[in-house]
Amino acid sequence: MNGKTEEKKSLDTVENARVDALPVANTFSTGVVKALVTESVALVSSGEDEQIQAVRAAGCVLAPSIGDTVALFICDGNAHILSVLERCADYPAQISVPGAEELEVTAAALKLRGEQQMHLEAPAMSVSARKLTSLVETVSQTTQKFILNAAKTIENVTNKMTVAGTLTTTAQTRTTKVKGVDTHDVGSLIQKVESVSSHRSDVTIMTAKNDVRIDAERVSVS
Image (cartoon, rainbow, N blue to C red; front, side, top):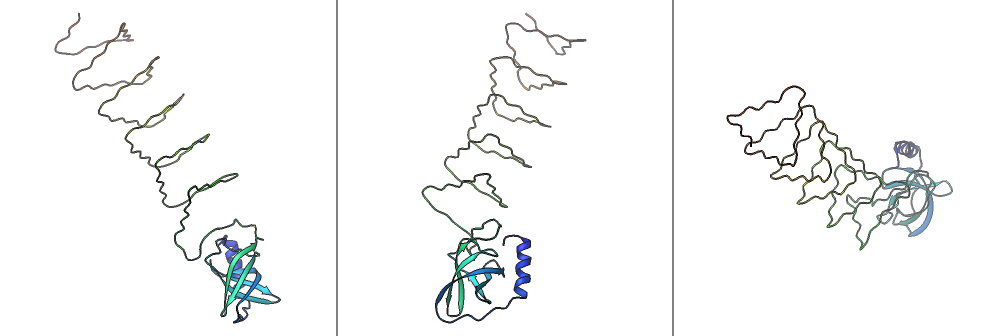
């Protein structure tokens, strides 16, 4: 439950452990976890040379680890771990509900805070919200495919740099406004216009190192 090393130690301990009989009367006691049989069953030392097998109660959301001091409730020959009273292991604390495949947390406001870092991991993740705000210093994304579907996108950036092996833009209508200087530094520029190509400027300068060629059925200059 808290790593392969602890699991192997747990199984070895269980194989060589002695499990004592449980009293029938209802009793409360404390004990120390000696081994983990499964994710919800542990071998607990509840007294002098007394070891019992206890099942983790559904309300015990903090998973016990080897060496932890736990609260026990024994009823009709069955022992349950009610809670972890004191943690002893250096393993990360794990919160879960025994036997539950899904865990839902509902509150008017929910906050998750990591003092150093936060790690989210899942085969699939879904986020649904009417408004999502992110305030970060650096965003780094690594993905094989990125798909964005939106009715309208707005970008406000001071400097933007795009590096791509192939860049393809498809649009019904495109308008570009550059208040300063628009500079293109390309190896070859090929333009294909199906209908009309219009160019307007106060001064137009074309400089060719070798040739300027115009091929058309009719050329008009006025």
